[in-house]
Each structure stands twice: as structure tokens, then as C-alpha cells.
Length: 355
Ligand code: UT7
Image (cartoon, rainbow, N blue to C red; front, side, top):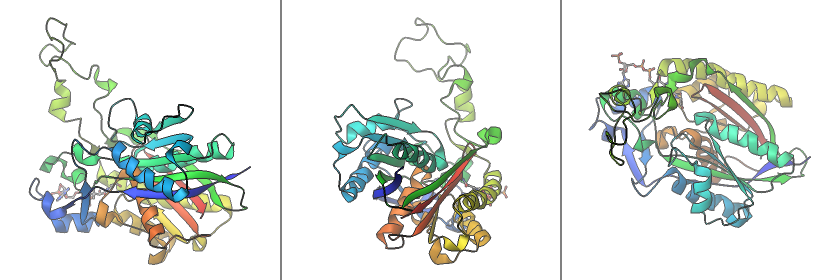
């Protein structure tokens, strides 16, 4: 059976840099608070009306394809992980196909809704397709445009200051080289705390997405001529179209689940923490990554963090960080690379790769 190798990798972040100080114009926060609690110094925001997760993913994908030595027409499957898609539906997979100008309709496009763990979930799915021989050039991307949907008032500050925009992409191919590529992936979920890190609306839980505010029922065509927008009052009053997070709960869970799932991958493959050449954790919070590093007793040079520059880019954070580490020569041929993530769902996962 072949294994899955990373044949090409690329990333894209928007030009606009937004510093912590910039955010103090909109909400009661400070550079000190954000740095101290999260390690973030700045993040990137995409150009509204021009950039979307799809356009950013396309930019990253073109680099990944070029580095893999393939044309976009050679991609036979697309896996797209995002929590901030261009549309409610269809998903970004087909939008990326169109954006890249792929005319081949023999390919499939899959959308992954696992938020911070999206890239690892996507990698695990792609890995099965490659190992089974079904596909030969899978494009896996994680991309987010958080800046279009955050609450930039003081009410939303615990979430808004953390997130940034960007995209990362990899081309996955089969390899027959012994011991190379993805060695193992591990996925977990626990729906008990589903709403503790969530964005609830629009969603079917509220009955209708759009309702007559006063009548509490879907308006008839006479009452609401087509084109007129009636907004569900609960959505407006509770602002459930903004992300919500119980930060302390997420933090507590993350610092336990990250080491646990990394140890699971090591145990499965017979490696020790000392065998890891590079750990690329999902960039949720620098304090979480440092906690995990201390728990696993890894030296600084074996953990790659870039949340300081980009904030938390959710599904994009691992491929962006992995790509930067690779570009800087910190991930080299033959290295044992560990990826791990934890986030909304809760879902978490890990992957071990012989680069
Ligand atoms: O990738 C998705 C997964 N997400 C995560 O992994 C995030 C995990 N959680 C965290 O990173 C942290 O919980 C946060 C960085 C979100 C918050 O840090 P914290 O140390 O847990 O702070 P807190 O929520 O306990 O809030 C402490 C205080 C509160 O004020 P009071 O009640 O003590 O007066 C907050 O209102 O800090 C206040 N606060 C802020 N102050 C300034 C919350 N956000 C801000 C802010 N600026 N941006």
C-alpha cells in the first residue's frame, strides 16, 4: 500500500497588517492584555469584497501545485477546510475548483467543517483516499476570512482579538518509499460542549433564519414581498451571528487534549517525544502551545509558532505554520513532523509525518 507524502506546500496571507493597538480603536482592550494572554502581536485582514477564503486558498494552492510540479488540471480531489466559507452553501471546495480554472469534472470536492482541527481531519480523509489508490494528487487546503464576521465591540473582545485571515495548501501524493509520508493520524470528538465555541446563526435550531420580528412566524408573500429582509429577532438581540467562546473552558481542555493526542500518535508508531524533529501545533494561543511544549519537554527549536504574526487562523494555521517552517529550513527531508490541533466541537487530532 502506498503512503501519503507532502509533495508541495504553500500559503497566503493578506497584505493588511492589523496590530493590537489598531484594535484598541474599536474595543476596550490593550496591546499588553493581548500579548500576555495569547502571544499575538498582529494579524492580517483580507480586503473586503475582493478576498475570500476561496481566493486566498487559490493563491496558496497555486504555490503548492508549483512546488509539487503539477498543473491545477492534474488535481484529482479537493478537500477544503474552513469555518468562514464564502457562502452558507455550496461549500468552498467547488468554488476553489472554479477559482483555479479547473474544468475537469471527473474530480471530487469535499468540504470539512471541523474548525481548528479541520486541516488534520482533512489530512486523515485524504490519507485514506491516497492509501486506497483512489486519488493521486489531492489538494488539501485550510482557509479562513475571520475578519468579516467578528464582533469588534468590547462585547466580542475575548474572541475578536485572537483571530486572523489566511490560507495554507498542500498537494498530497502517493509514495512507495518505505517509512515516508503520513505515518498515522488520530481523530477525536466530544460533542458535550458543542456550543462553548460556536457560531450559531444562521442555523436551523432557530426555526427560520429570517422571521417577522413581531409576528414570530414566517411572513406570507403579501406580508413580506420578495426581496425584503426580515431578521429573526433572537439572532439580532443575542448576536448569535458572532462567534461565542468560553475561553477558559477551551484553554483547559486544549492543554490536556493536545499532549494526549500527540502521545497517542507516538505510541501507535513506537516513537518517543525525543524523536520529534518538529511539532507544529494549531496556532490557537501561544500560551497553549508553550504549555504543551513544557508537558512534552520539547526544546524551543522543535516547536514552530507564528501566532504572534498571524493570530489564530483556525483551519489555515497548521498549513501556514508548516509551510513557513519548511521555507525556513526548519522542516527537512527525513524529519519526524508532528501536527496537532484542538478546537470547536470539541474535536481534536494529530498526525505524524516522515517528511
Ligand atoms: O482555536 C480555537 C480555540 N480557542 C482557543 O484555544 C482559546 C482558548 N482560550 C484562551 O486563549 C483564553 O481563554 C483567552 C485568551 C480567550 C482569554 O484569556 P483568559 O486568561 O482566559 O481571560 P478571561 O476570559 O478569564 O478574562 C479575564 C478578563 C475578564 O475581565 P474581568 O471579568 O476579570 O474583569 C475579561 O472581560 O479579561 C477580560 N478580557 C479582556 N480584556 C482586554 C477578555 N478579553 C479581553 C480583551 N482585552 N481582548
